[in-house]
Image 1 (cartoon, rainbow, N blue to C red):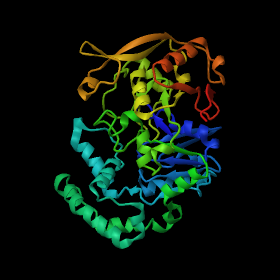
Image 2: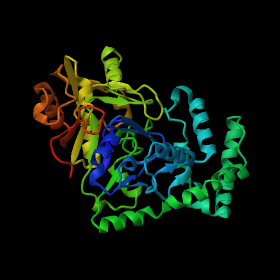
Image 3: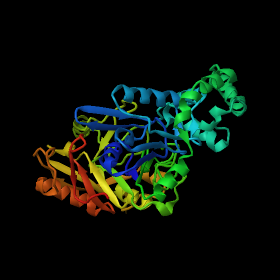
Image 4: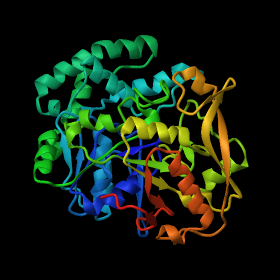
Length: 423
């Protein structure tokens, strides 16, 4: 399993791609097209939003699990874009139980954020949250409903009884008709059918054959709806436990949890961020690391490495291995502060504060390490790294709760230092 150890954008796509040749199935188990993975293979750069990263690995079966919410238009746009570049997408499998993002949920997402004003969450406006809310309220539309017009019509009618009132009477927006929504969704059914199956059974049978299944989280630990910096979180479970509910694979069959962390910290959207930088160092990290959202293009907020967060991620996910990405971005900085604890109103916190108010007021306590100026992008073994870079990795590792097994030193597939094989 691969999860994000911070607020997302850590490089999970590259880590999945790094493992691609060793696995038979790559499964996306949560989220939707509200987050993206960037994978660089040679001179080719791929930005994936809804599709699992394994779709780029020949022979690997990519799976969209039941815990994902699916924008069908985006799904086919991505498929068409990859096929135009020569990527075979025919092995893709989609859970019949995954929920579908209806157009009215995209509209509600956008107008709600504008309505909240300064209290906005910072969503992508893609209808993710409202679709998960429908799922919990038991008025959601699932992929399998597209193959039964009677059931689909009944579900859309039920959803629009409430949502139509919200759109017209609260937000002064015209609600779509039942016929319009049903017609749009039914129009996808024939094309969607070859991809749809019981993915839980598919994966269980693969494990029975001793094949390797890699589960890939969208978003990250601090964006998890239960264990993240609520309410500034996503609407799904992005930690390792979410992989079980999002795929149908039981926890007893999971034997490795790989968490991805940048060598510094970023986040997109609203919410607390103790190590955030508003100075030239923050701008350096943004430019050197090209910190702009794969899906949204929004500039990411940047800050120093926070080992309180990575230690928390190790604990709630049961992390066995860390992959530390973008170590090369730190090249050229004379000093590298690492957050080891927080000061909250004069009280030291070595672990994540238990309540939101304390985390909002947390002031990072730093230990400073020397930087390096050598180009590390060509390093392929730990010993080839400058001593200061080795010391930085070992310092972060000692305070993060699990070993750092792989270190990213550039964006391309082969630009990695492997300290411990991930399998």
